[in-house]
Image 1: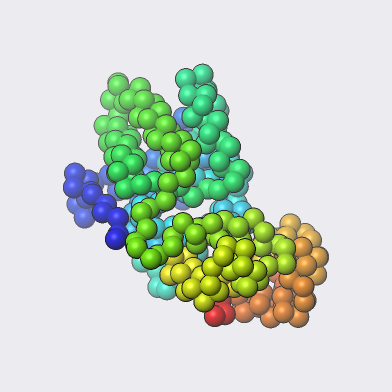
Image 2: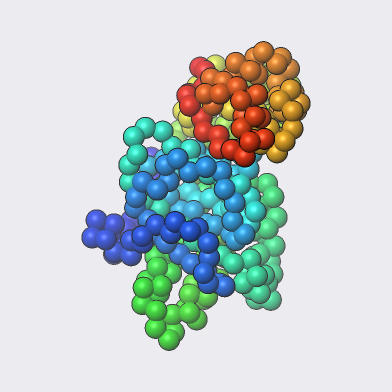
Length: 313
């Protein structure tokens, strides 16, 4: 059953709190900044980094969101928390369209100053960011988090003598709720027969081991699942088959290594490919250029890399 997202008091249709896109993508404050966007600026965004935390709350649509070498399926009801210095970008397909989202920026020095009051909370967030950036609360917690984000937007627009103090109090509540979610690792309730929890364990295992020799048959045996059932449920929940997901993870890692200056063969083998010709074909199909083309582009100063086609099924 889909998650019910209640936006009664603040509706994007009347333009409440909608922000103009910040094209500079730099913080001008030394604590927090928050934006409510509804535009097509997320399309064709290349991998980029910030020197601050970014909490990304998607309110419409669904797509893959990359943080370093990890790829997450982002949808309404889930959030991404990107740490400072981490490369990240959204991967969207189709014609450009308005995407509604709330983006919260957090100055690392300001967050560190909260450790006096929230030592356990910030410790939990920091530890979990080393493992995963996707935050999936239960429905009630998500509504609380969404309400706190809208409260921050309200105080940003009100901007009176008490707004700054209230923003910091609201942020503290928000961080505590995020910490609770990360501690519990709560997933949305699964439908009967969906095997959601099992599939998410497979998903997490692939994220940790895709550089190794890994096959769909190995996964099915390891998790005591029928191969066809696992493939069908994985595609339903994640959006692609396990084989396609493993290939995508390896290609993204190889692309990242090439952008860092590693040789193309080293990038392929280090990412889990055992045959260079298979790596070459998969890379060209996925990105629309060869590994060598990318290496030449990197040396000449151009490093943008966008997927051109779907994965093989």
